[in-house]
Length: 394
Image (cartoon, rainbow, N blue to C red; front, top):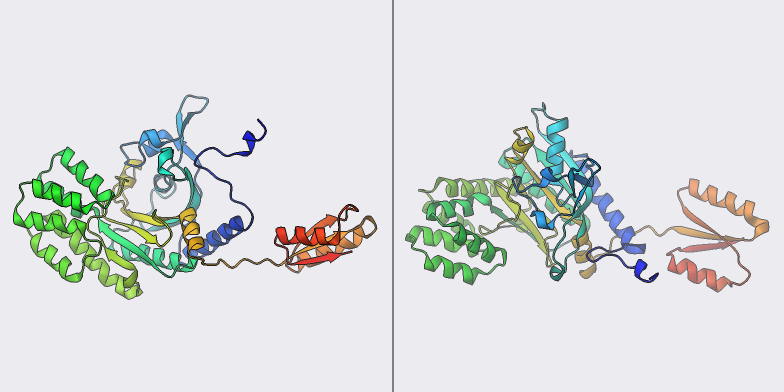
């Protein structure tokens, strides 16, 4: 029974020792970057009312939420996503603000994934939300911030796939697809099963123009020529054309930031979060099968909380990013300047005094009482296990 108490529930894990140190340093580095872009820190509760993440808002399905009740019988949930919580806060505290609001956050999210998926059910997310700005410049700023965040973390090779919700929705509307056909396409695209997408398209009675536009859903990197061709084909379909023109304008601004090489246009990109209304994106790197960063534009989510404010944001999945850094052998510099002072009863006062002096000088110091059953080598071994680089015997 006692051994069972040492285990964590499925889907969660302990983070300790040097891994925990690396995680904290990574989070501090990324948070400092967000501050340089003018984003202000905000903290929201770990649990909220169920309605904050309801189906109407378009976040996580109810079956994947951790639900419980308070004393009054209200249904509460552990937050599965940070964005709706931030939206609630902005509507409450910045309801009359007419200028953009920049907020950044860090916290854990909880999704009750099926066990066979092998995913963590608790993840740390760090991200930012730019509320009240519907410009292409805001889209570009968020993408520039994402690229710089991944570079700050130490990644050299990564790619941010960028799509637009309007492209797929416009195709569905133009082709007058039934709900079942739409859901089949969504599932195929989510699994990157582009051969399956082609089969579905071939089975539909579409015009040559629409067939060619649908075929672009399988492109993982839309070239400038493809973008121009898509615009020519979509002249009769305003929603599709607007999405493509927005992506073209975005590319022009991204060149000002000098980050084009990290960005690829993926017209078939979709998100499970239904509140996204415009640009969406996800970032990948070697050693991570899951996105290390994801985000997008949500111009109607704030309306649900009583404030009209087009917005865009992103979240870095810290756990996925750490795993990728580890697999790529990217080191996160850690200051191991810690001293162990081992003292005997008669030198206790001297040991405490010396430790206090060293701490005031900015050093990390741990104290240990000498045990007669131990040897000096035992204490040296202990210091190595605790990653202390200096030991003093008094």
